[in-house]
Length: 54
Image (cartoon, rainbow, N blue to C red; front, side, top):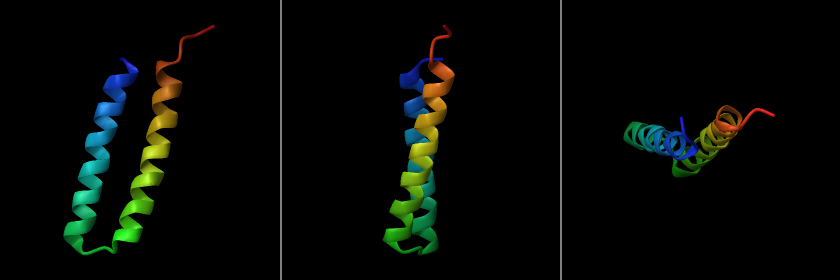
């Protein structure tokens, strides 16, 4: 899979999490913090899975 496809899927996941948390009435500060954490983990995962083997 390509890195761009991982990022597209990650963006959809983060958007879904943000939408769900906002719907539940969670404060915006916590929504941003959670989304940044998920985004960081997702980018690290995408880089490790799409990196070429030496």
